[in-house]
Length: 278
Image (spheres, rainbow, N blue to C red):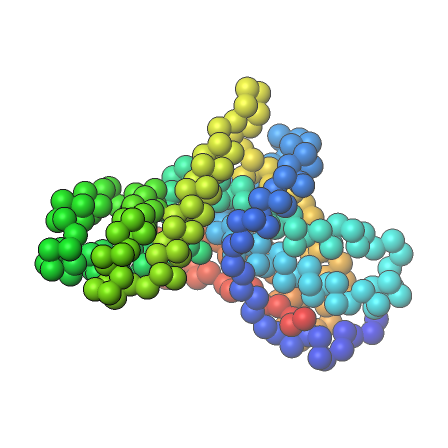
């Protein structure tokens, strides 16, 4: 069996970020396939799902890079299954995000919260200065600050501050350190966060007879695991003779299992996925 070219097998690590618009679209696309899986064969996602998805995506990419070699050696390689692993992974990420939203609202807003926190701090610090100059009532700033500091509260703070600046811009524009672009950004961020909160909370409410978010996470992860079994089978074949061993290029999804605690932590380290570059 010919070995894959050296250029394509240099080990590398793949990292992933979560784009909710893409994960939601993938979730909708593969929901029916996940629901069709028999309940008896569902896997438990006892791993960090995002890391497992990065492993699956990288492993699938490695095998896809050997298409020519595999087609020459194997009849009827199920390329459609291998090609869809990336999208099924996005669907699994979305299912995981829906569960985490129920457990911790902030976990679904990692892409927006850093700038939200920064901009909220800028606006409130500036308003405090304006309070000392008797240009803004202290009561307004106190009302904004007394919230519960949840994602929704922070979005409402941005909205309220932005609306206040807009309504009083004539008298504040020459005394503030905040510019018009930051005020517009505050409103846009608030709208984006509140819209996502609403959409996700609606998604999280199952209709009568529909599975819960937790079950859908199991189903989406199982769909990914089933597809990745195919990737591993053909990866083992094409990468068998490589010095690092085939498992380095199509690692187990459980290579990214959650870190153990206590004494077991020293005995059971978490492996990072090793993959080939594009």
